[in-house]
Image (cartoon, rainbow, N blue to C red):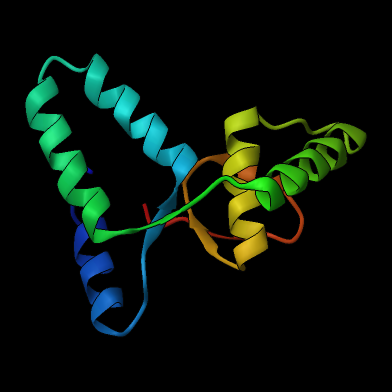
Length: 119
């Protein structure tokens, strides 16, 4: 949302090449929390609404809930638990075959998930 370079320019370039971008409903919730908790609430809410209208919002639905449970169980069995919100994001990405753009190291432990770090 900060539109920091070089990430913003890379997103624009990828979009121009036909790539689509979106976020899970879980991420949208995290962004709303950040906006409401910020010192610039109205400005950030306006920016968030503009951002969300330009992106695909993938829902956390029943299929994602099942995959979330599977991911949490897999990670617990492997001794590498991940935070629940990260597992929700991973579940949505896994069922839709999406690539997760993140610098968060928790995602690298989740099997069947494509991740890239653009930072």
